[in-house]
Image 1: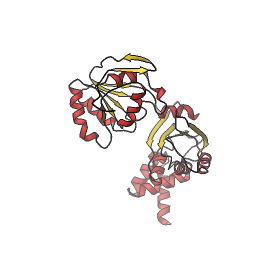
Image 2: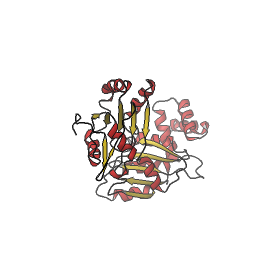
Image 3: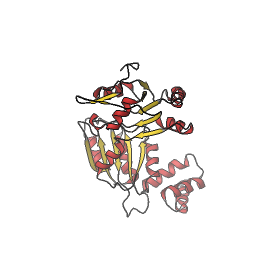
Image 4: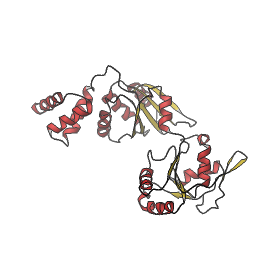
Length: 299
């Protein structure tokens, strides 16, 4: 879509056309569908049609959504590679009363894009910020997982390296909440092996291609789901991993979790500080961790 296309401020659903009222100045953080284009909200359509400019991760992706609903608007790329450079001009326009809508390629902005800094700067400059909520891969995966929903923690994208991934999982080992993370289809099998190694036989759900034609949810112990995926020629699609909370009788972290935590901590911390840090994170007496470290040195 040409960024200089005339702006008509309307959207269409089927053959019916709707006018979009002009927006007050400010930033509108606008959720878009995570897969199925029918999941967009009416308010999001009106916002994208009425905004003076749409800030997009990828203008080509946003253009497909706009075409579906007959929206013609100015598109401006805003992503991790150009955010620092273009943000001053955006803030200037917003400060002058322009209305900008920020959209990601899918779902609610700010979860895995540079929108956070823009919102923070708007707040610092007293520029109004409005959220236009909608689809979320995090909540969709949680709802489909069959795991407890009363408490949950979002970990973002899991680290690409196994050692860092194990360290992160170890930090959340004793958190009494369901854990949710994004993962690449190319790393999900290795990630599940680390989940088993660090967290033990937790119940998990691998949700893939949410709301799309080939949506899939695999539930079971991490090791079981790992075997299923490993047997496939390849794993494709966007994945959201949901990990159940520790069982009520899980008094302490597993042996592997403790030993992995010690190994990681000793790389950057002296013995006493390493023991204190691990004891705090894993809820284990400091003297027990200290004894393990000394035993390693004796060996």
